[in-house]
Image (cartoon, rainbow, N blue to C red; front, side, top):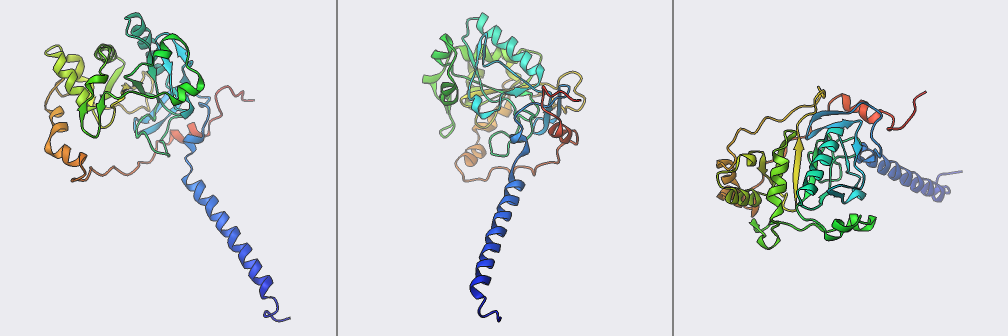
Length: 302
């Protein structure tokens, strides 16, 4: 029989093949784009370790905090970014306890790291990869001061900004007098490497601190960070694969702050000058592949 009489069948088979090919291409594309670090739901069953750098690393043997404890309330837990190195967990417990016992309220703890650290494929943080970074909100919810927040409240709670990132100014009506005391308490903890805040917040802290500003050396101006401050801990003792960041050498309120109010900065802010290009992603430390493949914590190995 000639192909002339088989054209409908041939056409149907061609359509079927094209559909299958499209489906296979979509699956392969998804697999290529999927981020295995985001898909890990449980910490690895390994000894605790922060591996690599803050922006290119992973977390072995991570832990998490209870949803609520003395002086703190976890928020946005539905994002699954509430894991950290045990040293970070210990710091947060100590820090929040000090906040409470100094009558400074109940802090709200947001993003830490994912279950096994690693990069965020769906946007967001460039750091927070090794379990040593944590975001703490400036604002404190009145409900959280009196009771535990519900799951819906935790995931839908709104943060109150202390700075307007578009107009690059402090939002004075939102300023909380507890903020400098809380920040100072964190900065003077020897475990803390840096604290990132919006530049206008750093400038205001310098203005109100006067010469009593040594604690502000660790408080660094950075993009965003208008509704939370970002605490970064030093590499834990014994984490030989953790790559430390260079110590802050500038003065507490020096010239490095001036750039954030320069013509060059405003040109970048207003879009008349391009932002510096981000460096290409680096190859992750080899040990991170072992973290990714390790069984989940709580698994009994036979």
